[in-house]
Length: 207
Picture 1: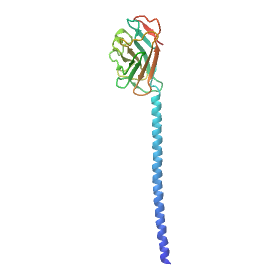
Picture 2 (picture 1 turned 90 degrees about the horizontal axis):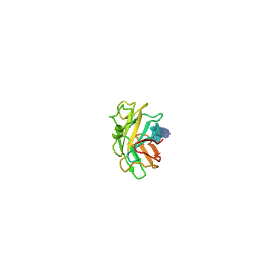
Picture 3 (picture 1 turned 60 degrees about the vertical axis):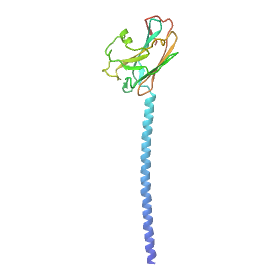
Picture 4 (picture 1 turned 30 degrees about the vertical axis):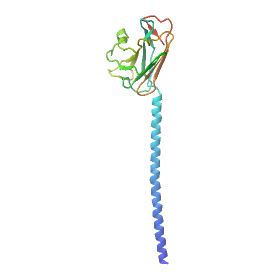
């Protein structure tokens, strides 16, 4: 009878050890599951935030788009001002981080952006020398109220000048689509149609 009682005590201790082991394993597993849940929630939040950031524009058009015709009565230069969108951080307008693509009726000009023009910093008049500094089928930006770098900041304004080379000038009633894609955020798209009755060497308001 005594041996039977001892045997029951041993079985009870073994059962308790197994139960404790299961509880410890369950607790550890629960900790892992909860941690993975927090991690997944955090990553989801980051992905959503990143998606919203990429889907909203970092820059916006800030004024009238101006064009200038050449000697052949066709539009040769297009100038448009941009600034930071409300609530957005700085945007690097350097050639390594910004891409400009131009869609014309008969051609597409890919990655024609040359970066920020440093030579004309502080110049407050859009003249022929500034326009001629932009090569054929290329684009540059000129930052006003800037501090000498290529970063567009709050209270700064950039004018982007596009030079359409020979054979790519816009004629009357033709439409151009300009896409400015910074390193972060959605692309800024500018679409304009040339009016009729263009004259040589004049500025044209494209709206």
